[in-house]
Length: 220
Image (cartoon, rainbow, N blue to C red; front, side, top):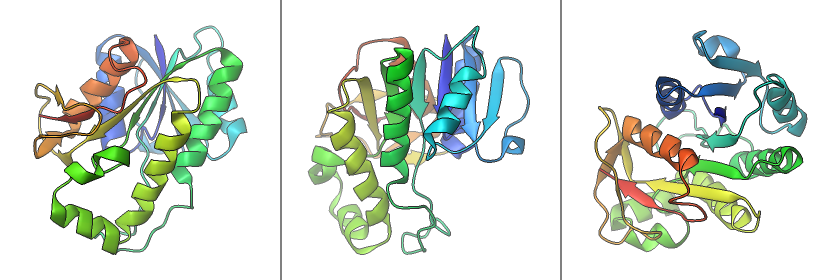
């Protein structure tokens, strides 16, 4: 299966590409800077932005004999640094508009499966985020990212797609470990999950129908 990946040059996105290729899938990655990804067998890199529907269409058409059959999104609104109060550098609705453009192209090509890396704290999982993190989100520039995630959550549920909006807990560096799902809201969820584990889960999500039309909160 060919998987179309948005956000493939990010920390988790690169791990998703690794996981998909290791499983024998082919991958098309839409990135602003193709040099950010190393050339590899089975990987097609297309320059562009998901904020332009035409760029997504070009990426889909880049491999006409082997078109994408599913989509994985690993985008996040960026800030000047990892500091929660750092200035936001992404445009408003980065994720919401990127998903809207992706869904429009998917419908044109008859593709239904899309898996997205969201976050614990999105939608109805917010009450199950620890108090200090709820306070940080409310008081810092992380709020803009979560507002964008919430728009994705609302709009994807109306899209008619077979979406999976995965809500990982705090992301860590480390090897892939078993992933546990804590339902859509995350009651009783663990503290963290490795980025590699999230990559494994998202590729699982497009291979299977287990989590279709759900918002699973996941941790190790």
